[in-house]
Length: 249
Image 1 (cartoon, rainbow, N blue to C red):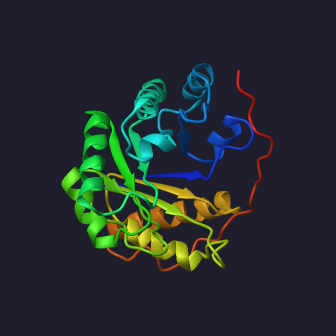
Image 2: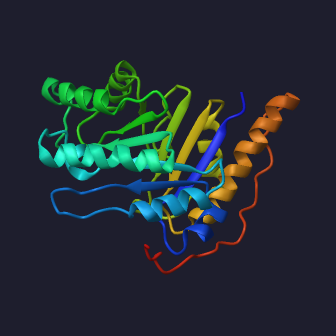
């Protein structure tokens, strides 16, 4: 099975058209109902969708009140905004990143299940990104019962088994860049699956994304030829920075 690898940066900087030439994944955050902050306008979202290639993926991220799993007007507003954003962008991925206060207790498990059930769609993959007290095995096991993909940092954890993998490569402490050897290990963890979504949060996301894509491609070629496919390292290319935030219509 040929893995479809989608790579994105931490955030959009500059014009979307320039970003889409370098990456093929963008996380889009929706409405923050409590603080009355909105994500991109509907007109901007439509422009992005028209400008993007058919293979470009948008991952729609839940607003902060929705992620806290607390029912109420703000929760409902953010859920509606998330679904509307996904419809405009024709997104196949919905991401719920829960804060540390969402613990492994039965109360929070029940609330998470209820939220996932309201988001569930025949056309979208739901990704849950836990934080705080969740142990890896517990989170992956509960994610399996919910039929969702569990997001992890593949530089520090194994990517859970399944048709879809979602990874966030964080720039934490000394890990402000990923070496080719580190990216090779991540390529091995990706393996063969339907889709792999990787958000690279370092300043060198463009360079590291190109390296990772090359390593995954070589791994596929090696399996077809009977070899490991990862014997020779791919040399990273020069980094290109994009500046100035895009102005909405």
